[in-house]
Image (cartoon, rainbow, N blue to C red):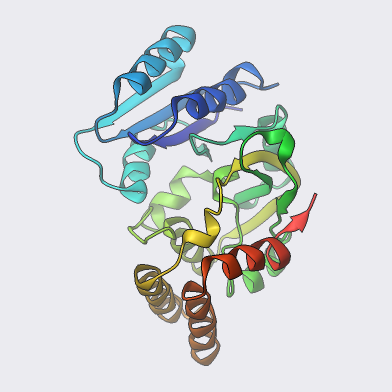
Length: 274
């Protein structure tokens, strides 16, 4: 089965991380992708350019490099990349994460066994420095009905392991700008359109979260993003307006908490120990 890998790269990426990402996508996979579409979201530095040159020599036409003249943000960059994906099934990946060697084979098997599902992801192991120090699992629900309930409170998919039908994503308008929630915004629109969704039960990827990445997502700009999420939920009529407003207040309160408190909350209540 043909499938495309879609990535977005910008100048602040660590070349070592990008190289590890490519190794996990190509060298270490039991099944190779039909194509890898990488969007350069604005100009890159020499180190990143040299690394792309190396990988272009390694895998040739499998790697499609799409260049944007300026940085436009993740949502717009992914929309541009989607235009260049020739496969109906598109698998997402972030340029600093590492796939498990059986990620693609497991997702292909899932697609074959669940022909009515148009969008799904998998479980992930989060790490700071090296995958072997992974101790926290970010889990998402498995079944369609459970996902619908979960989506009212949190994003029900791990974006860096998502696989979806390109035609479905385009039919609901693709990615839209939404600070750190481009994915959540899109998933809600897919769900509201009535499509069948799911999640793979296995861990498919090592996700590089950095030191305190989650806890740094706080402040007024994130509360504005939460308000945009509230307005979308109300527009799509995915949940009771009273409950939607309550969730907005709860999520906004966390955006104002001290970093140390947020860090402890994420690790204690929103993640599982490996």
